Length: 88
Image (cartoon, rainbow, N blue to C red):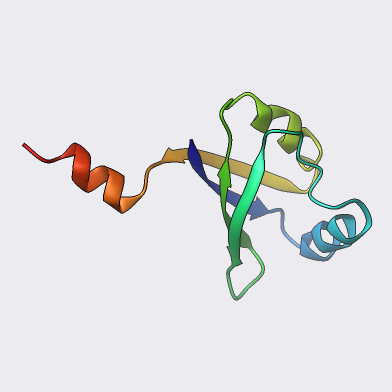
């Protein structure tokens, strides 16, 4: 299953987010897979697509970052999947 993860960096904490990432990596548990990401121009938000069979894995992952980042995690489907589901 795909998820859109919106990371809201806490004010002024983006440098710490990137420092931790350089030092420790993504710190995602096995089974939680990174697909792609984009960062807004102000370093306030990161938009990630991630994949997992078990949504509970997000709790383990976000615990590694919740001192620096607030998370919004939304299950999503591809546009092709949505279009197919809407066919009569």
